[in-house]
Length: 355
Length: 216
Image (tube, rainbow over all chains, first blue to last red; front, side, top):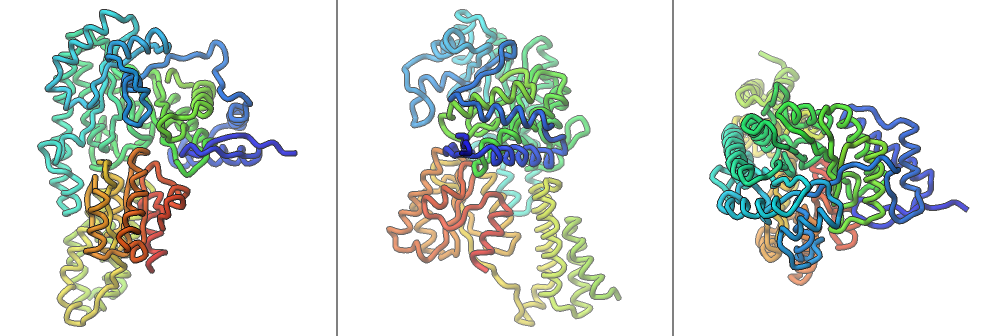
């Protein structure tokens, strides 16, 4: 009797596949990444290893001994005290307590302090509060404490900011004006990020995390790269990490360049050298989960992209793993079977340096 | 004088080169050569837009390029419009699509791209914007009678509101008068089946193709 293996769809639904079906899925997923990114697909051995991981009988799996990698969290404190019908567990606790829980109970190797609005722009009016929280965390903790938020360039456009929304301008065929609006917003994004971080570094932050870089497209990445450059120049020894918003940089502008390279349409292995050039210490590559495909397809695709990014990068790659990224299904609380298999595959096959 | 084929090729090139001036020139030459305006639009301008759409899907062109091509097409069409009115000829309207990001969700980039691609694909698009209340969708469907009403959701916490849209359209007694389409990262065909949506658009191109299948 044929054995069926329990897997997931990208939306988290449980499915059962035979070994042959599973192999077909991972070959197709790897081929999709290879085709889009013009990168090598996984080798026969790597596909076999991936299928072994996916077919392991335990509910959870782990990396082999000696292959452990650093693990960090973005604004993890939200998961402790948050209780908005999302993945928060609703335990009343301050951000200090949340950060300490991550350090002392959950095994985080670094931690990040972030404000609930989680974008650099809205941190400006509350920066004194953030500085105080950072100082208190630093006085109580040992692991490196980063300050993190999203560049989130959408906040610089109407109705949330001073510049006309490029989406509205483009719909009116005002393309030149849309380009100008994006470029102005990028300048402000760079300026605000540097201003906020000057204060947080003065309060003892060990580094900065740019979370979901490029969420508003290529201009968002452009502004972020320039902010990284400025921060590296002003603070030569700080730790800078940039995680991406998606696998491919959206071409909302289409013509912005960094270091002579057009930003629109870049895949993780093409993003890595630019991030490094700007002055990063760590790159957080992303691969999106397709909710209509199986977790086997998604994971093979994600591992293929990440392996190419690791190869192209001279700085450590800490892959983004979580809801809807890194081959993990898109669920508020991602299922542990899928999370641990994806993590093991990323470390043992893609060769990522951290998660 | 250039041949009919050369003029149509020039019209197509004006779109793939995003050249509004060239599109206008091609349109003027077509009028002088007595080329049927509808033929110029369909074989020249629209064919050029199809090439641009394919390159967008491949990731070699981006949204501003698609819109610049659409702008060039508008320039050409504006030149031949008086002649079309004189001849009482018109390109076929493919239908009306009403689109918006569902209540509670402010993510509009994907919705904007689908909206632009539908518009370029020949549909009349009514874009309600982002964070659109379900009641607004229902009122606007009653008022503007679109063929398709499309809702976008980028979050698992907002996609559930797409159920309410289905239910409130039924309560208002207009569900059978309009096709519903859903899209956005967490949405799937299974989700569309589960809530009773007629169309699931996986990408901008998929959305346009499926709307065409349903309406044409």
